[in-house]
Length: 102
Image (cartoon, rainbow, N blue to C red; front, side, top):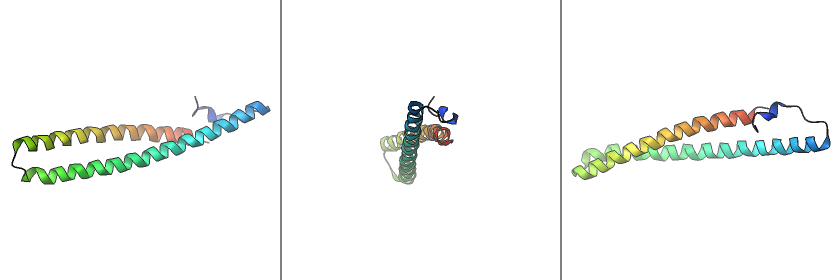
């Protein structure tokens, strides 16, 4: 497996050394992509938390039961998305750690 193979020594033959360099390059690129995704997820989490806070602020002022229910439903959906993001964050953090090990 890509992230687990990095603990091996550099092969002595030219072809093996070339593959090892390519492997290290791909591994570094994966870490960069994971870091970028983690930043984007943090931004999304911040936006979603602001939406929940705004809904909490607006719900008491809404007189329509249908609109209140819509806002409550939206809060539940946002809560589920936040939960999904937390799970994804944990996975990506573990993958980043696995690929970052020298």
